[in-house]
Image (cartoon, rainbow, N blue to C red):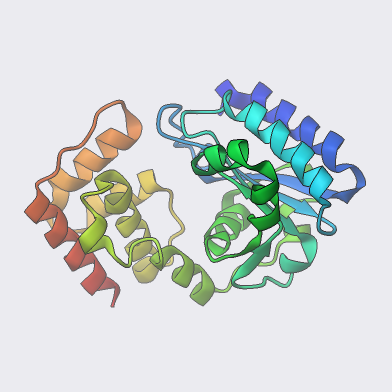
Length: 250
C-alpha cells in the first residue's frame, strides 16, 4: 500500500480536478485495504461517487486521465466504477453505474473512445461485493465518510454477487485455478460463518476448515497469489474440489 501512496494521492487530485463539484467522494477497497496487495498480481480498486450522471465530455476527459494513470498502477492496473450517490443509500441491487474501467477494457477505449463512453454504463451485480468490502473494510480517500454515503448491503444481495463469480467453477477452474480456488473459499466462509474475507484470508480459512486432501490445491493457490510462482494443479483434484465446494454452498 505504501508503495502506491503517491500514486493514489495523485489519482485523487485528478478526480477532484476533473469532477469538481460533482464529486461526493473517492473510496478504496480490495486488496490494498485488506493487507494483501501484490504488485505483480493485484489491481487498485476504487469506487467514485458523484451527485449526478456526467456528460460525455467529462467522461472522455476522465477516461483519458485513467488510461494515462493506469500504466503506473500495479500489474493489473486500475479498476473503478463511478456511481451516483442515490444508489448507495439506500443500496440498489443490481447496482447502476455511470462509468466503469478495468485493464480488460483498455483496448476498447483506445480504439473507439466515443463508443466506450456511450456504452459503458448500466448495472453491475459485482458492485454489491465491492460495496460490502468498502463498507466494512474500505478507506475514504476524499469527500464524505463511507458510512455517510453507503448503507450496508443486504446479505442476500452480497451472497448473490459473490456466488456469481464461482457458479461455473467445475467447468472453469482450470482456466484460472488460483482465482477460483481462493474465491470458492471466500464464498463458503461467508455462507458458513458470515465472514467477509480477502482471497488471501479465504485461502487460509480453507486450510483450517476444509478436508486436508485439498491442502495442495490451497497452498498452491496461496503461493501463486503471494509470489511470482504459478500453480499447476492436478485437474481431477481441482474439479473435485470445485464440485465439493459448490455442493457445500447448497
